[in-house]
Image 1: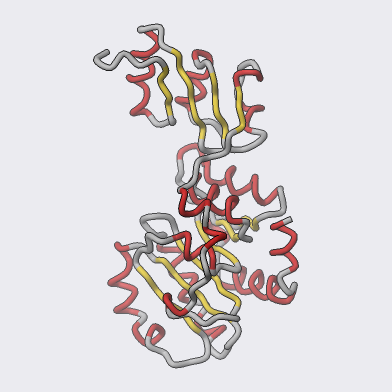
Image 2: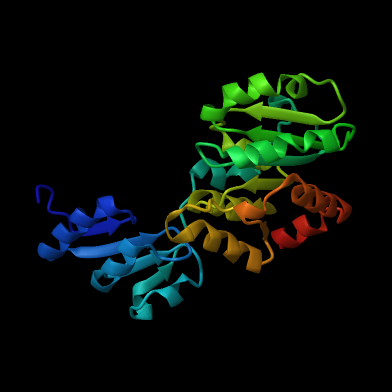
Length: 260
């Protein structure tokens, strides 16, 4: 009411509801942006009032019961630093890694994911004598102290296999630049950055996300041949080991195919 906007953009989430309602009552133009593959309940409800609906996945339109000329495929905006990551020189040493190894980056979103952390740690015994693989795990600040304490022997190991653990890394554009494969959850921002950087991924959707939206985000990439989807209930180190070995044996052909 105070600012009298010409157009109101809703990004989903219930915090947008009162603002969008106010816009409707004020006869303002409404636009929506849907970050996930399956539209959320709020965006679905307000779509009938929207002048434009911006979608992040090319075929999300089939889940919106509105005229197709209202729907515009824009993708999900990513940080400029990530968008320009191809111009960054890969720096392995900065992160305690070695150039030339098959590099796996694992993380569970901004807060970390205990099941992903434990699965990655459990890979150590299998790969400890392997000098061709290295893993960088971003475990989340809430798990970091516990992991460093309980896995001290692994972290300080002088074996052939390299495993580096960080609580949080803000320079993800640099991390993407050194990645051969990513193991992660399937939130909208993560998926968008993986798509932007053309990185093969093993996606483990968070099973308690609203309307299971992470599953559908991951499934979209899996159907496009750009990711492997593992449901959280099926995640274990044996599956990850098998996939990693297949990717390495494939001599990165999958990586080349994804970039094309």
